[in-house]
Each structure stands twice: as structure tokens, then as C-alpha cells.
Amino acid sequence: MIGQSEQTALKGETGTGLQNDLFLRAVKGEPVSRPPVWMMRQAGRYLPEYQVLRAKYDFFTRVQTPELAAEITIQPIDRLAVDAAILFSDILVIPQAMGLTVEMNEGKGPLLPDTISNMSDVLKLEVEAAHVKLQYVYDAIKVTRERLLGRVPLIGFAGAPWTIFCYMVEGKGSKTFDKAKAFCYQDPDAAHALLQSITLATAAYLKAQVKAGVNAIQIFDSWGSVWDKPDYASFSLQYLKQLVQHLNGEIPVILFAKGVWHSLPELQATGAAALGVDWANTATEARRLTGGTITLQGNYDPIKLLQPVEKIRTDVRDMIREFGKDRYIVNLGHGIVPQIPVDHAQAFVDAVKSYKE
Image (tube, one colour):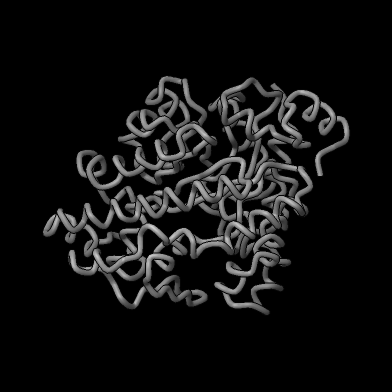
């Protein structure tokens, strides 16, 4: 929990009804006393309390049971006192809702047995009503909001159309997604039809998350780095822009496109409120590419959380100084990994919360 004096100050400054909306003020570019902090995949396998639930329930039971999803979402708020919660769910609920089978094998990642390979497959997908099948997500949002008691904002999310496309065509994870890329080159009409279908289903899904009560949205483009800049513009960027426009300023949107440094200015031009960045480049370069006019989020390599605690604290202070305390959200450059000790994650969070210029 945040300290009483900090809690009172935050509540008095914002007028949102939240005890702590430092994250929302940073997203909007408002001046802050310190940057907010949260971690991608913070509700997950590095937490012992999560492991208890993982041992009792399979993955999609945890995702599809609102009370369990809410409990997992709140675990890092109770344990680490981060400045934002992100809903426990999965990006692959969209292909599920569109009619594909998704299997989640612990330790092996997702498997989609029936992949998309042509226009006929694309036309069989459910698009308009896909979001209706995801009521369990909206229920989880409502339960989470009730249990959070206004402590921190709640972030909803979805996968970028290109990243979802990769799984729907490839059928599983890949380092290069050659099959997905080949589909785009060999049958661009079907590829764009699939990307458009995913975009429409995702837009309706995100709008329903907003209606259910999330305070911000993050869109994850985990596999954008497989493209060069022109092809990224064609097969990912234009669909991200559509998603931002569909939300039409209703709520702040963070775009996180891992490994897509070449297109940071174009991602900024989508109208997103903030951009997530990974560790493959510097804060100085990210600020240069975006003109210092948009909130940036990131970019600590999660494996560095295995370093000694004092080194983590030093790194965090240096990272904040490089990004600057305003228009900045402290986060990892990708999701936290299971082998990170909880006290190291806590040191990361505490170093941010104790930051002073």
C-alpha cells in the first residue's frame, strides 16, 4: 500500500476518485512528483500466491473465471504496491472468440491446431459477435474494480492484429514467424482480410472493456520486429491506428511494439497516449525519435532483475534520470519472467517510489 501522506496528496491532486492515479496523470503528460511504476506480466508466475492457484486450476479456467482473474490481477497490488493493475487475461481470447481452438500447455506455450491458410478460412471466422463471447473478461473487470476499492487504475489490453495474426496462421510461437510472413507475401488479399477481421473484433472487444470499467488500454505488438519498416507499416501499423481511432479518445491507449524502434514516430502519429519501449535502444534515442512530446514506458530488461538488489536500485535511478520523471512510466522492456525473486521485483518498485530529483 502507498503511504498515508502520499495517498492523501495523490487523492487531492487528481479528483478521479482513485487513491492513486499517478499512472493516469503520467499517461496524460501531466507533471508528477515521481514516475509511476508497474510491470508487464506482473500478475503471474514469479509470485508464490499465483503458483498456488496455478496448481489448482488450468490456465483457461483461471482466465475465464472472473473471481480467479480478479484475485490474480490484484496479487501484485497487495504484494508490491505497484501504481497500476493490469487485468489477468490472455491475448489469445480473441482467436478463441473468432472460432479457433486455442490450447495452452504449461511450459510449452499456446497451440492453435486449426490454422488459417487461405481466404476461405478467413471468411469462416466470427467477427461481428466475437466480442460477445468474452463476457467473462468484462465480468472479471467489474469484479476487479470492486475489489481494488479505487486503490490504483486498472489497465485492460489486447494483442495487436499482426501479433494475433501470427498465432492464427503459424499455430504456435516462433522466433521468425516465417509461415505468417509468407502468407502475407503469397496471398496479400487474404492476409489483409484476416488482419482487418482481427482489427474489427479487437476494436469491439476493447470498447467493451472500456464500458466494463478499465481506466486505460495497452495493445501488445509482440512480433512486429519480424518486419522491416515498409512492411511493418503495411501489415501492422495501419491496423494499430484503426484500433486507436476506434477508441476515439475515450480512454488512454498505450502501444507497445517490441523491437520496432524504426517506427516510433509513426506509432506516435496513431494518436496513442503513450508508447512502450524495449531495452534494445536508449531512452535518449527514444525521446529523440518521438520529439519528447509523448509519454514513454519501459524499458528495463527483465533479466536484469536477477542482479543484486543494490544494482537494480542504481539502474532504476539512472533509468529515470535518462528518461526524465515526467511523461514517463517505469516498466520493464518486456514481461517479467518466472525465475525473478520477488524481493528483486520489490526492489525495482521501491527504487521508483523512493526516487527524488
